Image 1: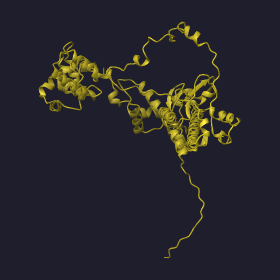
Image 2: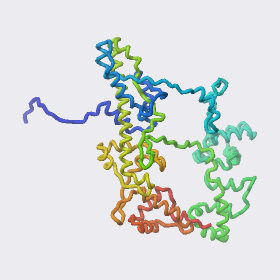
Image 3: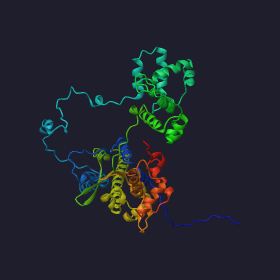
Image 4: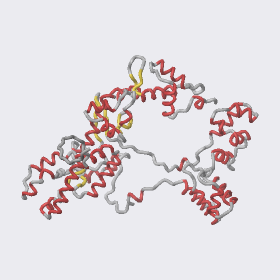
Length: 495
């Protein structure tokens, strides 16, 4: 084999992921909150970017946070520049439009605001004596704060108060003491197990009652033996101590046989137990409720549906004009400003393209799922990413990025855009039904069932088959679990 060197010239095509293209793809898949954070960071890092004022902007300008870009560039290209070097960069700069004068009588409006009714808050002009907005905000009281407030008012000795504070700090969010045992607490604090146990029992009788219980049986037992309203029924206490697992499985006959009591008495005792609280700390849960801000709205105007973009809370960007004078300065300053200018323009255009793509995808979904918006979830059609991608002439990966963590507000509620994509289930007449529509039918059948004779999974299969939906029992069981619905044996009500 002979080794030699030679030169070849070849032509090939390949996709190069430039930094600008990577940024555009990143912006496309960001959620609304992530996009807002990114824009805020860019406003801090890029001096040529600034936030446009909202007062005086017309409705057309508010369709997108960057709709002013094209018109501003056309306006700049028509202007004459005194410097030839600056003139060569005129098409790359962006200048924000001056907002029109606001001639509205705001003072008169504020003076009469108190007469607009209780739904409109009045604004005081002389508010120097009012507290700041930060001073009026407060966080809800936590379980630890509530318990420690009671400990300090209960005359705990200093040593016991120290033990109580450590134990309370080990509580789980549910109010149970499950992550550490009494001997472990004693070993950490250098005290006896008896001391820790006595302090724990005092804590368990503070409000909320039974907080600090180590398991469900102890939690219910403490509530049943509360000194203010004790439950003296031995059957209730016996079931709590020995047969809680059988209540979960509805094995009341076994409880009656083991306890030697009539079945009706077991039912009555179970009612008493069900009146106790298995989660005593639920009122002090620190979990914040998730709030969703839709990216796009679908509104019904007359007989037609209109898709509008939601720009509320999203900063409206423009290019600052105050750095134009620096263009005639040193070459380094000029190069830096040109680089920042290109970065700002690309960010604005990328956000513009992102918003337009979201609207385009939403309009395509509206076209395919129009019956859903008119009649409800039962008329949701099977839809895949390829259908929308072919309709808007984009790639499936683009549609997937657009529908991830994006939400739409509709007349029927707020949905994630991915909700409208479902696999098809064949019907007897040859049509296909979306899987979400089948879940809705299963939920309706369960809601309307006789609670003393709940429908089993096989019965649900038969009911769906009567409506022309052929579906396997294991598929019904999977959909039922996704709906967080218990099995028929656990849904049955005997009393």
